View: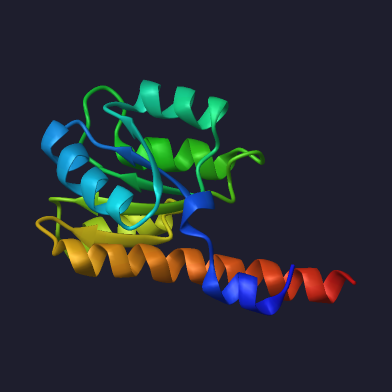
Amino acid sequence: MELHEIMDGNRQSNRILIVDDEPEVHTVLGKMLVREGYSIQSAFNAEEAFEKVKTSKPDLIILDIMMPKISGIEVCNQLKGDPTTKDILILIVSARDAQADRIEGLTHGADDYVAKPFHLRSLVRKIEHMLQKRREEEFEASIRSE
């Protein structure tokens, strides 16, 4: 892989899983991300999320904390504790905006945390930055291993 391929990135190859129990979040965020060239999947609860991750491992998960039955924090714990999924980037997007909530999310393995309501363009830029940073890390690791 060439440096320009890493730096330019290929959004078509980036798969994003949106995990939120609010259909409106899927609609609004999904449309914006598809328009930006990302491949999107949706899950409305933790069980669906685990199933989607098994069948088509995403590059990044946008994860709500407050969901029925299994919280986003527990989803994050399970994914980051599994060697086959620990490398998936997790961006928590939650209505819980207290500093303690942010710290809890990051402590349990989330790569970043954004409070609702959020500005769509800012969130897309954050996602781009997270994926770009991952590509750069993978590129550097490939150079070191040669």
